[in-house]
Image 1 (cartoon, one colour):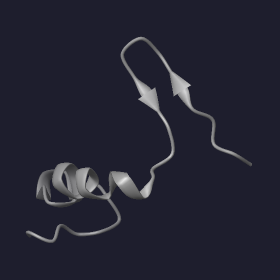
Image 2: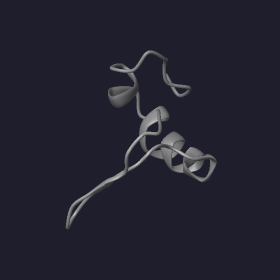
Image 3: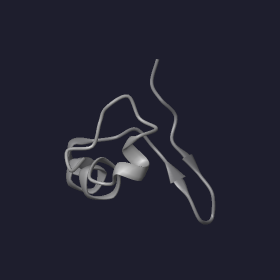
Length: 45
């Protein structure tokens, strides 16, 4: 099943791609307050 892309005027929800890796790390993985809710632990914590 292909994941649909959902778009509104202010938001686009789409599957991750390899080009997203740096942003994911910078915005989520490196922030312990965000990573504590994920199934991984922060690399900074």
